Length: 77
Image: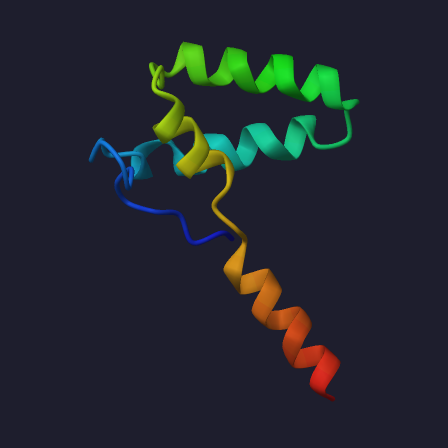
């Protein structure tokens, strides 16, 4: 499960309330082609009222830190 930011770093809008729905959305579109992913992502953001690019960027680019740490731990073994 990704650790999502609580607020947008630029404008201060609360984005944590969209984290779970974004995660569910991403699981459904991650196997689509890139143009289809982009269209679906834009629709998701518009439907949830995330109109600012800064908020979209913060939410869409939050890394799955726990998965990264698990992979690094396995690599060390």
